[in-house]
Length: 145
Image (cartoon, rainbow, N blue to C red):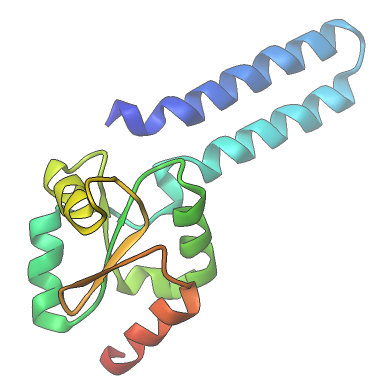
């Protein structure tokens, strides 16, 4: 759990230090803008922007029942963030597995990617796809919606 929050916490701390230096130098407006940028970056890199993660086993069982894809991701991954943002509301229809919180999920990703934890890895009908285009992932939702 803590591992997922390291980057966001570091971003907020760095922004706070930089803003404090600007405020002590007499520049409160740029300090506020800088702090806001760092807080936004922290939010984007936190687990908060993603739908609730579940375990790999639960996700795979659900996918078997309803055919929805399973997305294996991790916080701080720009490609995962790109997929999440480009899917918009459709992202809630997928099963999301945070590989930093679920060792079984990390094992699935390593098996699909020659031992590497390359994310996002999307499982559709039991087949893995590494870093697929968001439009393609959205198309995989069409039959079940």
